[in-house]
Length: 373
Ligand SMILES: *Cc1c(COP(=O)(O)O)cnc(C)c1O
Image (tube, rainbow, N blue to C red):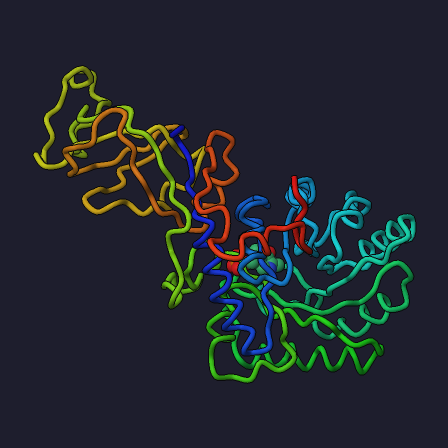
């Protein structure tokens, strides 16, 4: 195996998607799977679709293009408001996009007319996260302008919670979003097809006892990939937390004391090979660093503690006497570590359980979502 690498178990991705999709289906909500943390990795996206995601969502056009180039043909929605400079490619690659700016929507409409297409618009409403969104009192106005614009079609409204401000979605906020959907319909006519309630942070609300109202879509990334509730960090029942494993190689062992006061800043000590203060703990170095991942977001295997990291080195204190130069160490990652590792050019991505065990033919024939490549 080439190190460093990420092992991704696609069976676990399928299982996690299916678990959430089935639970949400009973609540009248479908799952739009978000691939941005895995940079639009096509095999992972397909595992999400195989697991029952209704479509895909991405924040970056470059990742959408990667999916399209790999032959993914399902609906892809851009969930970050498009850059004005990219509208032509957005219309070409995405069925719909989340929007907050009328000038961008007008540019999308013009691009769609040039391409003889109609681009779907979902208006993002600001409901407390204080990141993107139209203020609720302006929503009706903006919606009316979109409805009157040839080249675009108003497909829905959406909100986002717990990203910038960590404001968790409450039942009251979700009710407000439903009311807004009804208001927009009342003000400008067309049926609002999609009311997208938010991201993985909405799952406790969606699995709870409250009525779901008009909310019929959630955009889920982290919970599918890591099996956790992003607000509490707790495992979601029945989900795998270990679909991804980061593997890194030991390049130095037992070189220096773990004693923190023995600083090499003193020249007289610099060449002395120090004996560990705690005889059971040795210090090892792995060939991975800040440039590859978020070191603080790695779960240390039992008996190991993170001492620190630099751009290319990860220093760990270990009680595992079997570790030697050339050994591999395996880590679980949190969202921040995963997102950076998936984007790191030096990290190879190795797939496990690529095909569903049963129905492999049915699911992987040249079906709706897939093209043979
Ligand atoms: C990233 C993102 C999501 C998905 O968030 P997760 O916490 O990974 O589920 C959904 N919606 C928007 C607008 C996003 O930017």
